[in-house]
Image (tube, rainbow, N blue to C red; front, side):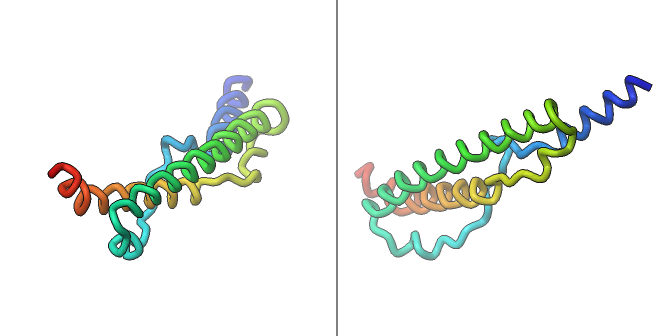
Length: 113
């Protein structure tokens, strides 16, 4: 009986936790705005989006830590009701990839010459 209860508590804890930022896949984003940017503009956009990704990843890690604490210390499954930044992390990752791809396809060749 105790094993069954422990298993249920462990499953509830894992299911109710926010995802780790490293486990969040990039979202598909519209790349049209990046096609019109200059190479220097793309570098600036990459820096800005990198800062944004760092911030939303920190927020997501904090949400995950709170979820784990709530699930373990208070009520298993309670962490599922707290908010997280998963969508923001996915979108930021998608924008970073889009900028990197655009820069690599247009600007990487120019800079090498």
